[in-house]
Image (cartoon, rainbow, N blue to C red):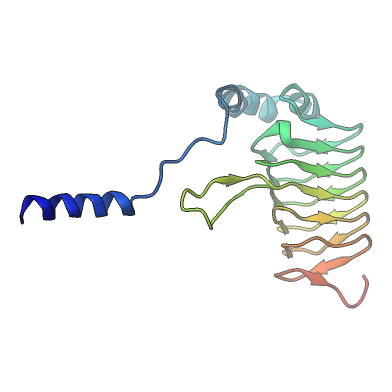
Amino acid sequence: MTKPEVQGNQDAAMASAPPARRSAWTTRQKVVRVVWGTIGRLCWQFGPLRAPVLRLFGGTVGRDCRLARSVDILIPWNVTLGDRVQIGERVILYALGPITVGSGTVVDVRAHLCAGSHDMRDTRFPLTRPPITIGEDCFIGVDAYIAPEVELGDRCRVRHRASVYRSFPADTVLEGNPARASGDGE
């Protein structure tokens, strides 16, 4: 190969390389995440009261909330829980973006609320943090999945293993993957 051909091949290789990625987190947020992932998790797992631990790390927790010991919360300061919220065993609150759960709502075992994704249209795949909003007196069933940008109105019922990818109004019963309104109303 001649020197111009080698240079041309190197230029082509550099042009096809993906652009550099930047962290979506500030230095302070990175430090708090490390503290949450170590000390906070220990307090969460072995302490008798989980709501105060969540509040200590910036979460908003209403009165009389019950959070199982095995709940996995990625970013606690993005979680807002109303009064009397119950979060079951092995629930994942993937709170890259805000997750708001209304008063009286029950999130059952192994449910996954995912408020984070990546912009697949951009070659850098930047982090997106769209919110999830769950209304009051809702029920999220066992192993259900709630996707980013979903808003559920009050008294919605998400049946077991349903996957919700779009918003629904109040009093809707959802089932299936992708979730759709149930025809029997129960």
